[in-house]
Image 1 (spheres, rainbow, N blue to C red):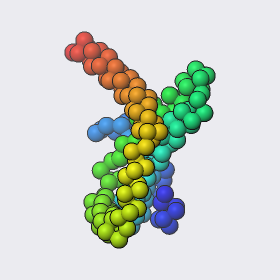
Image 2 (cartoon, one colour):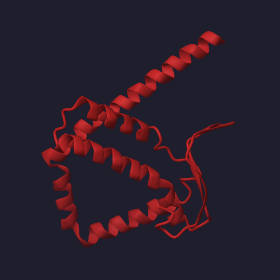
Image 3 (cartoon, rainbow, N blue to C red):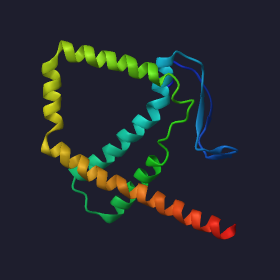
Amino acid sequence: MAGFLFVRTGEMVLFPKIMEDGVRLGSVEVEKTDPFRRAIIGVAPVLFGLALIFGILFYLQALNITNLMIYAFFFYVIFAVGNTLFSSKKDLEGTIELLVASGFILCALFILNASFWYGFLQFLQKKELANFFKSADIFLIAPVLIDLIIVSIIGVFIRKRS
């Protein structure tokens, strides 16, 4: 995203690194820029990850895939992407300014063209879209449950060692 916004980048780290205050899953050095571009760069991995997850879920549902190996592969991809969607405090710099500006823009668009929003709200209420999000919720709960199980098992082992 930094490249698309003409912001220079520095060192890129792709592999996890254990730090004193936690684990850093990866990072990219980005030159100092205005708050809007900084916020867009910071939330881009989250937005891209969510788009990837929902794209996979749409693909699985639209093509009516029944092969268990394909489901297992995509489940792993969703699990891996879903566990790396977190933004750091540094990533979220400039987000407040971006949210306020976006709010003003959305309010202006709503005032100028209310019929568009009425059509958009009708689109959101379509049965197919609701069914898609219901199945996405069910599919996305599995990684959360796996994370809870792993954290619980680690917690038991840590208590036994102490």
